[in-house]
Image (cartoon, rainbow, N blue to C red; front, side, top):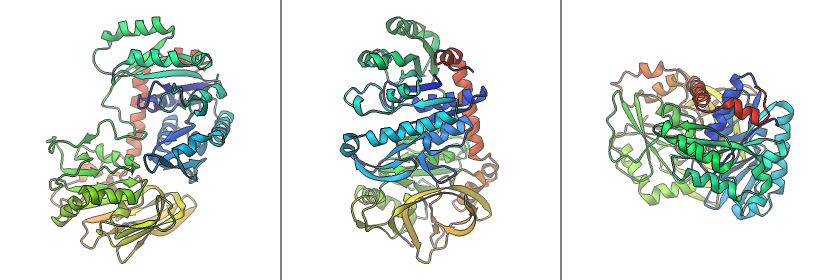
Length: 500
């Protein structure tokens, strides 16, 4: 064996969290390790150094492993555009739209690509930490599922089965999963990990003993829930997100309050996470229309279906709320799809994102967007005023500024120096948009962006905070220490044939 497959009893049991933890633990032991997920379903995507698109979760895991992310770490990415359809990214490039029925009718092509990518990683990395998807025991999908046990069989990986005690029924999760696996899959499971425990660990010792006795497998550890560890979520709101609070919270030290409008096809919501890390800022994620008068800034994040999200804003009443807040002196910002929504209109003449047509934008920026077949992908460095910003672009839209001034001057891309303009400002200076994902990662730039909201506030403390890249690395270290303290890593590695 040359690695571990982290499989789960269900979706959102913490597979990404555990995979990220083990990547940093193994890297700290001097092992060269690569994360892998054969197929991911998420609208949180990122760009590799060479301009390939993969899931943000695998970029996070590569960062934890201290290696450069490459397309082979996530060969198949499904980006949902509706309840039954998705854009398929294959080996870092768009492979076209697929309905769920079309995709699962025959996964042979995608299985072959995934296993070829896995072989590519195995040729370069001594240890693979592979993350599964959803439940590893979906019996109706087993013949078409290549993301869970097929990966473990192909690469000869020992399986760590992860269950979530926080959602309840942890014994049924584990025993039920094992009971319906076929003999070949069941033989791959080396042991168990119980995730997200709250309370006194000593009270669960008899539970651990019961699991050992009834499964015949070791329980490598019980991971307590720790609010002090924040890792970017794979495809959901951050676990510490404040969602639809009944009123404004009164938190010590908070100077500015930010509302993020959660649309049905919200994407790259990890862009907002750096704002949540600043104690001077309070971020609320709002799923239902409400009065925005108490918020200093309203943010529209990215979208995998901009026009449908625009229609949602108009039909739900959100558009009226946003326009009213701007009319009363409020500030509004948009990133990527959110930037497109702030314009005059969004056109899709070729049906790239959904059906052919034109949608009316919010009209807060003098820009117009049209979708092209070719997706723009790439990392960028530039300046927001005097502050340096960096990030990545990942969009089909091409946006024309109709007299609006640009928000960012791009100075460099991977291929070399450039002099390009990105984004737009409104004439009144209270609305801006940009295509740069990751634009909030640099505190000095964030302080510059927020300076106009409340000129009376001193944001120098915010500007002096460490860049989010440094914060991420600190969180990976905390996660590794947390995992090492509560998981018998030595036994896990030995049982999976890994020397380390």
